[in-house]
Structures are given as structure tokens and as C-alpha cells.
Image 1 (cartoon, rainbow, N blue to C red):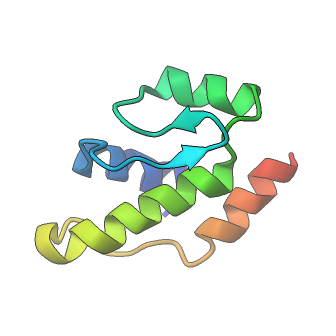
Image 2: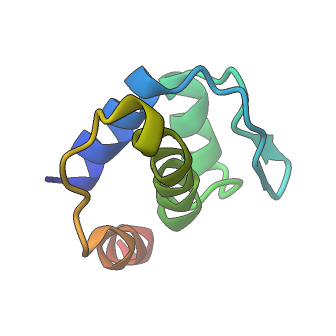
Length: 84
């Protein structure tokens, strides 16, 4: 499963009720456009975004049982994306 698939599925499962600070960017009731802007302005990294969603999956999935598998390389791929 790709990092984008993980993020997309997490968006569906999440109502963004949790708040994560990444410099001055807040992942709470945000939009994909806002995430793209935060990336461009270096207020958010791919790793921070993936960590946020992996945390959401870890907390929500035991109840929702919506994720079958999480890419074990998700953080590695996020770090690689940040380098590009």
C-alpha cells in the first residue's frame, strides 16, 4: 500500500479531531490544499504527515477495523519524499 493510499484511507477514517503541530501548521480540520501549501512553505514534512496518520490508524483501527495492512516502509518512504 502506498503512502498516498495510507493518507487517503486515514482521511476517510478521520474527522481530524486530533491536533498535531508541525512548526505553525495544524492538522485539524484541514484540507488537502492546505497540506500542499504547508509542504511548499516547509511548515509540514511528509514524515510528520505520515506519523500523524499512522498514529490515527493505531488508535482508531482496533475499533473500526478498516485498515488491513500498513506499509512497513511508510516512514522510510516519507523521509525519501522529504529529501526530493
